[in-house]
Amino acid sequence: MRDVRVVPFLVSELRLPQDEQQLLQRDWWPSYAHAVVHKDGVFLFDNGVGFGNAEIESTFSPRVTAIENGLAEHGIALADVTGVANCHLHFDHSGQNGRIPPGVPIFVQRAEWGSVHEPNYTVTEWIDVPGLSYEVLDGEFEVALGLRLTPTPGHTAGHQSLVLDGPDGTVVLAGQAVQSRAEWEGSSEPAASGASSARDPRYPRSVERLRSMAPVRVHFAHDPAVWER
Image (tube, rainbow, N blue to C red; front, side):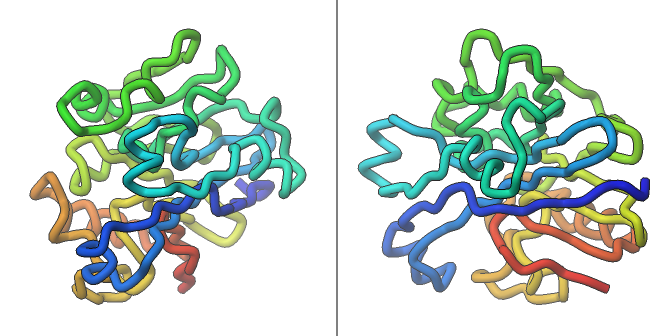
């Protein structure tokens, strides 16, 4: 696909608890959304933290940009969005699902969907919003010509990444299958790597699967740095 571009933008930040600040060597935990503009519309990958949950507000003091405002900063209207996926359903990736217009499909892997109502998994009030159009997948799925969701279990059992045919080769939106550019480049330091916090033992296998695609570019959900070949 030649007429495609990836637009990353910061959508939310969480003030980390003291112990996590020391582990991750940062005070704030950013979440990035990615809008993939293609010939048939816009596919939105992740949408950050939501609004109005008292526990999240008191614990993390989130700084949040409404998804429609983040898109507008790049000349994209929320009405232009034709499909959505969350790499997984933790609250810092799916918190603004409720702002997605009715009828726009939100794609999620079945293994992820089955975890939503587990205790302390996510903020269910941001997921269980009447009128949303979830489509539950069993494995790889082409969401638009040249754009496919692929399972990358590791951070969670139902994690998925977005792979697209870019103008100069394969582009990977890793989500949290890989935590950072430094991890992609080989770092196993806790501040860079998500391996130690993975819920599923298939984490390293998923990383290697993404590597086997020989991407020319890799984007990450929690790191603004983009890896380029």
